[in-house]
Image 1 (cartoon, helix red, strand yellow):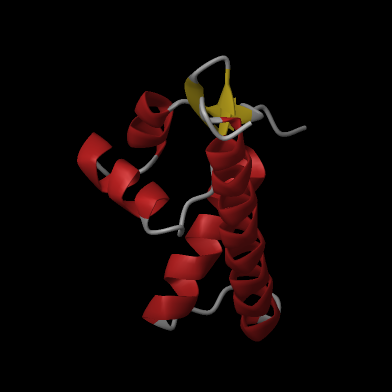
Image 2: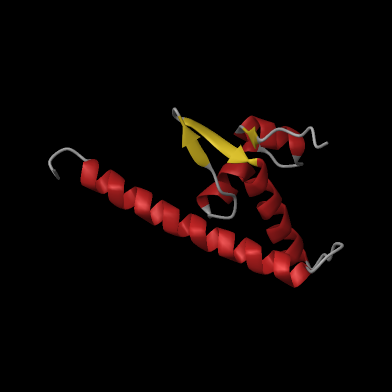
Length: 101
């Protein structure tokens, strides 16, 4: 059974990967690492972290057991879905700003 957490904080990601906090936030801002907000906290799900790792492996040309092209395609789809989610969230936030109702 897998005992890894279902989700991580940014600090948790920095403990799991050899990345610093600034790099994690930069990858989030670039849309390469998906997050969600829970009561103001930035949360990275285990699946988002695995998708991110598949993305950087594909970029580096690293192949693992299984179909690397399929993983890269899924990582690209996940990144596109995340970008769409961010656009939708921005549209909702703009609509909810005072004076726009």
